[in-house]
Image 1 (cartoon, one colour):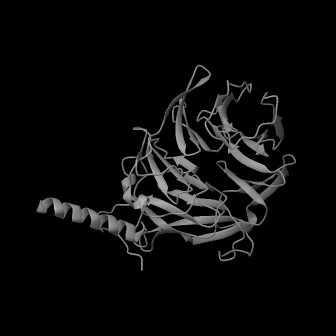
Image 2 (cartoon, helix red, strand yellow):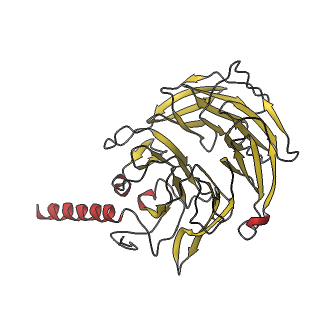
Image 3 (tube, helix red, strand yellow):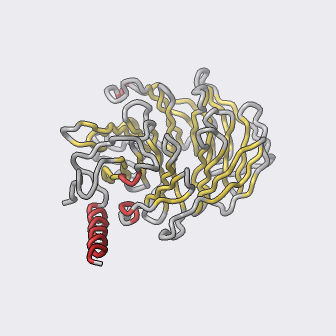
Length: 371
């Protein structure tokens, strides 16, 4: 009995240690490996702070992050910049974090971001696209701008680079689609053949680029990207859809709908519902706002309106209970995205943004207490 009491006491101490430090890494904290369902229990935070984030995009090499934000005057940039560049510091002598490298790239009414292999593209609320050259962008911010090209009247509500890197899907007013050719720099409207104007909230290309998924207004639909032939639409419970993500082999689709995460299979040009991922019994239903799958395909991280970041094992189709996430009380999230190498997870809302990493720590090892 005494032994059991000691074990219980140690467990409570560990939980309180984790909760008290709120995951915060200040020193000796490095992104030692890519996220996965097997190591997410070692998740740590590099801290959160202003400015808020409406959209973000990771550069393939770097790590470097681009964010669309409200006017922010504390960065080392001209007052009023709304498109910011963040360079992640990975110096063992100084620790690892974001914020020491921050510069304003441009001011403007930007809505969404996209990255190709060599260009940064920002959509605006006037239906145009602004382009910057990525090569050496950190050292030549003032010279990196290339051109601005109008697409059509309306607000750009989504930008998706096609996996071929040959064209860009531009969504205007959540309902009109345009194919923007990245070589000719010309836009052509796509006829989805729906017969009526429909509003969609989430979009995703399959990894091979042969399929486009869209969801919103209580339904989900798939098109092939050659002839734009539509699969039969399928109903979704609820009106809110926060994200669509194909699995690595493009055989299934993960759907973030309302408070639930659905798994659908794609067979013979048809969508079939598989199951709902099992939430942890300690969590109450919360509206999911955003999420992303780790590059290895094993882990889904979501954020929502319950002040918590949540982890889901996609091999077991169930939520993982992580004490440091459960008790941390993070803010409501609007965006979440893994870096291409999977070593960083960026989250944000309209007020704050921050980074998570996997760090080697145990019972205070490599733990820096918040002052």
